[in-house]
Length: 168
Image (cartoon, rainbow, N blue to C red; front, side, top):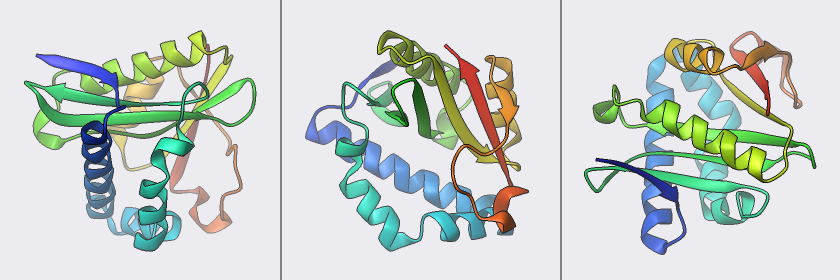
């Protein structure tokens, strides 16, 4: 049975942090370009600091951290935070490889979109690697449109990223 809920307990947050590290490892193994993107945006010391402040960066009411359990085992996470009063950004949507094929990513994305709408946001943004074809198909299939960068991004990595936007 799949359960999605806000990560609020110390155990939940620890599980999310582990899933985030798993996600970072996964991205670094996708391709040499993705490994370089990981090191550009999330070198280990910076990622450690990010994990230490995860609950503050995605705190309610301007954000949320979701944890997915499949048969009581943590298998996925996703989070959002405000970029401005109208815009929410999705970060680190990840489902462990052995839990894929259950529609978990779609459920996570739907839950984040519904929460952002309920919180008063009118649009939601995210970015992903060009090489993550299933993720790109999911976002397009759920009403996201490709757009240009919405944050400062080094020129040399722009061709390796895809930016998406959806109206809520």
